[in-house]
Image (cartoon, rainbow, N blue to C red; front, side, top):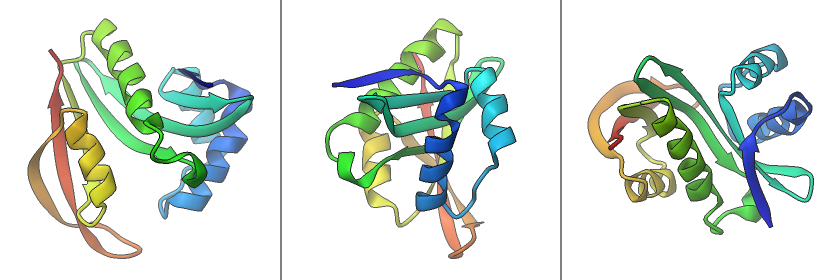
Length: 144
């Protein structure tokens, strides 16, 4: 069974491990601990192991998703979708009206997930990503 909750300080090492494994733009432990303290990281936990997380920020009535990831062995099990659902419910409580994110243009599985979650493409950003260099797509979900 997967549990969805706000991250705790002791989750930081699992989060850093996933960051290292799946992203080219990594944050350090101090960064994550600050976001954890401010309840800006939500995790999916399976029997005491973190199998996915979402990193976001909220300013006034807008939120931005920085990262969402699920361990490879746990993909295609609706975990990313359920992490997003948990986040959406929390953001609604905080009166968030819009959620933004950027995604690599080539990341079709992520784009499909975001569309399933109600996001729409609002513009393409030339050379947004490096390592490798690639255009990004900015997406928006209006919270009702």
